[in-house]
Length: 165
Image (cartoon, rainbow, N blue to C red; front, side):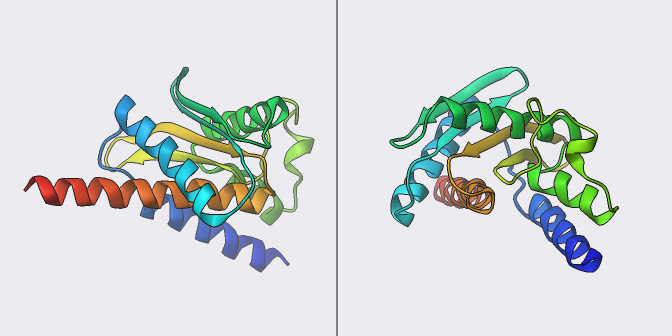
């Protein structure tokens, strides 16, 4: 079982490296948030609560149909976990599991959550500059939404850069 957890943790770290962005402005936060909304709608999944932050500033927030205040609070707990560890919220839990520990034994789950759904926004050579947090589906699906939104965002940025050259 420990090897499986270690493999998942390694996969999550690989994703964090793969999904780095070239820059991140307030307008980029809007584009990223809209990428998340677009992906949710295209996938036919029920709505989620989306929060995108840079430091203490909330740059984008959207409560889709079927999401609620509890989802916002849960997204904020996942975001706090990313801000503390500078890794995706799912990785924090996997790291503890791989060491035979329980995350919730060390951190108050009303403040931090190690479930999937929050992902660091990183710039190569700079590090973490923001966080996207998703809540409203299962932990695995929340994680998938944050990953797919970042993929869509990166593709749009690349197409925009290519069109500008």
